[in-house]
Every structure is written in structure tokens, then in C-alpha cells.
Figure (cartoon, rainbow, N blue to C red):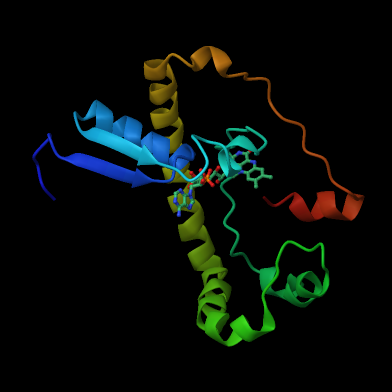
Length: 158
Ligand SMILES: Cc1cc2nc3c(=O)[nH]c(=O)nc-3n(C[C@H](O)[C@H](O)[C@H](O)COP(=O)(O)OP(=O)(O)OC[C@H]3O[C@@H](n4cnc5c(N)ncnc54)[C@H](O)[C@@H]3O)c2cc1C
């Protein structure tokens, strides 16, 4: 990495990730230019639910997850869609994903994710304070809804 602070840094993509990276680099004295095909935060970063979900730390790879695969793949509105031709290429990753759901690995992922969220929350609060946007934050909790009693009960371990 070049330590010459006068060098320009180009960031392709001005979503929340790109602009946070740009803010940190600018604070570190770098000269940053963001390029985006549409505009700053005009794609996914403008169309989300705007929840700062730092408590959402449950890893996706968990025991039993793979059981749901056939049902999800068969449902056109399901959360997962894999083009059949892509499946052989994806298979090694799917196997790793399945193994990551084993109890010991699950606990390790959970610990790692919780640690990252603690760091993210602290960094985020600092970034909001420094950018003068803290007044845009509402801290009034959240309401979680489940479609059935069974779905609610299934979520209780988490
Ligand atoms: C429906 C929905 C609800 C969500 N709700 C939440 C929530 O409540 N809380 C939460 O934390 N997260 C939520 N998320 C996730 C969150 O919105 C995304 O993780 C986040 O916005 C991703 O930011 P990003 O900067 O990585 O991507 P993006 O916001 O997609 O930014 C990428 C940018 O790159 C640009 N780009 C792409 N290709 C090129 C190119 N070739 N040249 C130039 N520019 C390019 C795009 O124009 C875009 O502006 C939600 C997501 C969705 C879809």
C-alpha cells in the first residue's frame, strides 16, 4: 500500500459500503473520489428497511437449514433461487455452508458475528456523530411478527 496521502483513491459504487469507506479514508487524510452508475445511495442502500439490526447475529448456516433447501428451491417466491446449470459450480460452497452449521462451528460463527456487530455498532455511532446525523436515529425498538405459532416457536432458540 502506498502511504502517499496525495494519491487519489477511486471507489466504484456509492452505496452505504462505498460511502463509509470513503468517509474513513477521507478522515485519514486520503483524497477519495466515488464513482457510481446511478448516484449516491440510490440503489439497495436507498430501498432498505433502514433498521440498524446489530442484534441480528444468528448465522445463516445453522443446523437443519439444508433441510429447507428443496422446499425453498421449489417455491418461486422462496428466499433462495439457484439456476440448475449453476448448481454443480455452487456445490462445493453449499457443502462448506452445510458443514458451517455444525454445532461447534455454529457457536464459533455466532461469537465472531456478535463481536463484529459490537464493533460495527460502536463505529456506526461514531460515524453518525462525526457526520452530524445522530438526530436521524430513532431508538424505539422493533416488533417481530411471525406467520404462525409454529414459526414463532421455531425461532425461540435464536
Ligand atoms: C428489501 C431490503 C431491505 C433491507 N433492509 C435492511 C435493513 O433494514 N437494515 C440493514 O442493515 N440492511 C438492510 N438491507 C441490506 C442493505 O440494504 C444492503 O446490505 C446495503 O444497502 C448494501 O450496500 P452496498 O453499498 O454494499 O450496496 P448498494 O447500496 O447496492 O451499492 C452499490 C452501488 O454500486 C453501484 N454500482 C454497481 N455496479 C457499478 C458499476 N459497474 N459502476 C459504477 N457503479 C456501480 C450501484 O449503483 C450502487 O449505488 C436490506 C436490503 C433489501 C434488499
